[in-house]
Length: 198
Length: 198
Image (tube, rainbow over all chains, first blue to last red; front, side, top):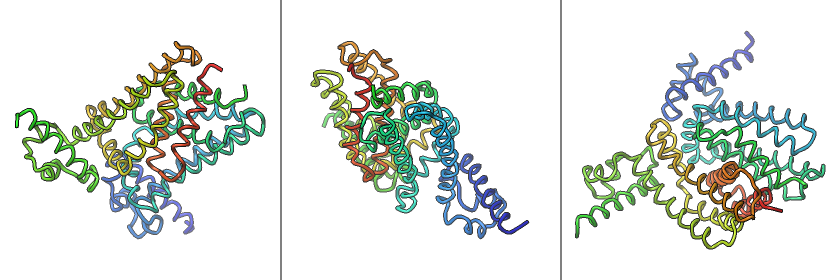
């Protein structure tokens, strides 16, 4: 097997082992040694791929968000207008919630620790900034195409992102507290009513 | 000193000691023994007031939210209309963020642990349900007074609460990421544009 391929396989095995260890023992309860043992990989090989356990978690998060980004890009390019793209985006919420089942305590343990480490923290916040930028571009495009009122795109993007973050957080904390798929659609209609040209 | 008064003082001392211990060593890093020592109170007295460390945290959260509830009730009764009350409520956001400074890792550590204990979990979710109910009543009152469109009050309340939760979460995670006071006001205007009778 070529070295490059073997190295990628080792990385993938470490990530998969980390998912399983985190699920079983929590983020705090899992150490690098345990991930290595579970993956059948040496500590040397681990540190070749990841400087820390935090880096493993961030890689998992990025790979998961990468899938979400792809879905959003497909919806965006398929939708005839920005309001329609936003409606379609709201339909992803149940998938996000399903994929997050059981992950919440792990994310929270990670965030609690990460907030005390400036570099990890910057990486933790990066997705929020990226989605804010993405929604800002969408709103600006909606104004340009004449479907949205001439609002401040960055401000409207904060409203959409806050709504999405709050919805996902509540949905993950309290899966049976509401029909979150319906809440996502209804809330998006209220936001669009506030944003669209009448 | 009357027994009743002494008992209340002990409880207050335990709560204050818990705040200081959590701030210094985190939620996970603080034990009941440490809270007792810091408060100068026996373990017997602790368990007279609180069954667990989780109960102490929930009491702190409830006392803090009690202050918020009072502020909201005052604003609601002073505002001439529901849209005006919602605008005023958005102005509380910077105060919530200021009061939350440094508390975020503690809340996240608590939530990560609490999610594994059904009784604690129900108590953790209670504020979300309560604020949803409060906003549902406000929206219904707005429809009744003729200022809001005849939306589904529960659905609109979910939109407002999601937006508030997402905003506070981002503001706490990333205090310098935006002017959150302004974001709260701008986002509320967009929501109101979607909710108000034109």
